[in-house]
Length: 232
Image 1 (cartoon, helix red, strand yellow):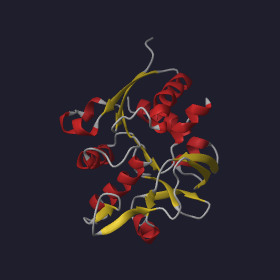
Image 2: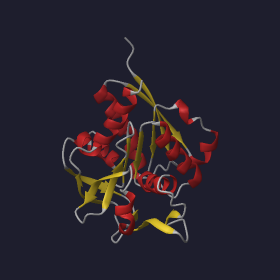
Image 3: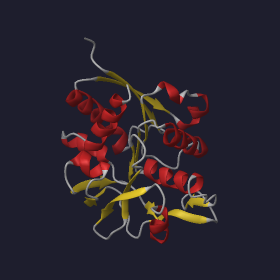
Image 4: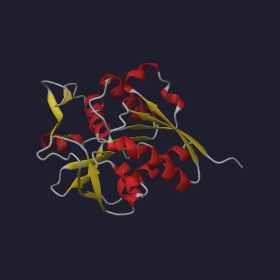
């Protein structure tokens, strides 16, 4: 009997110097071994999104590295995954852009933006009060959430590489409809979101893929791939 196979698209502009980009291939490889499957990964540069058939993938991951060369293409890719039910994972920049896409296209905040790249309107993603460049910190999870279920725990110590996150002024309103805020840092700031009515749509400001650099499984990468297997 042939081994199950997944085709995974990684949306982002690859940089060999980025720690997260170094961590992602071994994180996927380690998860594939744990699931006893084979996985083919395709890095999709954001400049190629307009010519890429996203329907060819089994799951989509918007990886760290914002601002992207083609921001509008990234937003379109996230919207497609959200509306089509394709298993979606976003980390760091992928988290930030997933929050903005939701704010614009579900909440109707057409002026929702990222303080790093957009001027005027609502800065849903704003500078963090303290930089998280190459920092680690405790994250707590909502009981029963997809993130907590993946980890089998209600907290974890996670790594970051970012200067931007959810603007606290908009946190409550972001969670008023279908988006669920399910991860926070010790100060109560948003660190992870998910869509409970989606087969798998999870995005985190922290980079769970970094677990692979410590020779450990990333629970979210495993859960993302399990969701893709479940759709086959």
